Amino acid sequence: MSAEAPLNPTAAPSRPKNIVIMIGDGMGPSYTSAYRYYKDNPDTEEIEQTVFDRLLVGMASTYPARVSGYVTDSAAAATALSTGVKSYNGAIGVDVNKRPIPTLLERAKKLGLSTGVAVTCQVNHATPAAFLSHDENRRNYDAIAASYINTDADLILGGGEKYFPTPLREQFAAKGYQVLTDFAALDSVTQPKVLGLFADVQLPWSMDEPDAHKLSKMTTKALELLSNNPQGFVLMVEGSQIDWAGHDNDVAAAMGELDEFAHSIEIVEQFIRSHPDTLVVVTADHNTGGMSVGANGKYEWHPEVLRQLKASPDAMAANALGEEQWRDTLATSLGFSIDDELYEKLSRARMQGKKALSEAIKHEIDARTNTGWTTGGHTGVDVQVFAAGPGSELFIGNQDNTDIANKIISLLPKPKKEAK
Ligand SMILES: [Zn+2]
Image (tube, rainbow, N blue to C red; front, side, top):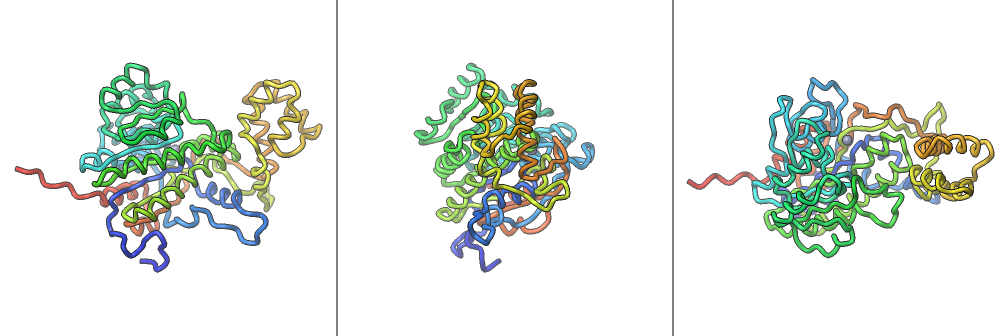
């Protein structure tokens, strides 16, 4: 045991009562490096540590089952992280033969623990789906949502209202769930079970509602509600849209999502200080976008450009489209002036619509920050593993994503022998 393990006070038990697994979707190593410089205080000589630097313990490979090659999708990766079994890309909690495999949350529930998920995507998207259900195809969104009626999860928090029509919501209510669609109402909830659907599909970009801190608030509430169970709990928290920003090659939105995910990790870290019987394991399911911190042969990266942005490129484009005098407002949102050459470029893009304008804004931000991208998809590099609390030493060093699940499963209480 390391002498400097501030989150492992000597009184802490060797086996955790509570387990929080946190997934930064698409959060490859370049994201957490970029985030460190994004958060750096430029007025001090040192580069300040982030929560990721503080909690880093190891690395994990992410490759899916052989049939899908070396580069995983979110479904196969989440299935690996929730079941300890590799499957094909697209698989939700099923093996390569499409047979359901028990998930971490199902195992925990059987042992009398409380369970929950809190995510920023729709709750039936690949990652939460692979912790809550079984389906041969991640795209079966309606079937996956409907199947949640059979999960015994105590908390399901995120977006995805449109996948839960009224009759389905009534079924949840009949099973004792409070069904919420108003985010503010989450505050006054005092006990599980809760199905919270706080957006039609995904939650807004964090950077477009900087004071909302929705993932942090869902995490805080989940810890509060689940810790009512003296047997303990297992909670999965996902910073879902780090990945979406990566697919969009949007470094600004990525830093916003990462910041909110980092806050949520800090909340769990704080919870561990007062509940030393809690383990947190943080990882990514894969890397997205092949983001590079520095590009084009130049040894430079300029996060100060990102710190001045007042909105996401998507939101800036939408605003500029609806306005005649858009040059000044856009410049204000960007935090830099738009010269004639850039104005020409943006005007041409604006005429092609919101998507083209958003692309043009992102290109300008990439050029000014000197950020590079290699793909609009996923890459096969290893991801980092972060952990604190009892059992965290199990995650030190190199491992596979299935090992992460199997280690967590090994920390669950042993099943009691059936009484004869
Ligand atoms: Zn993913």
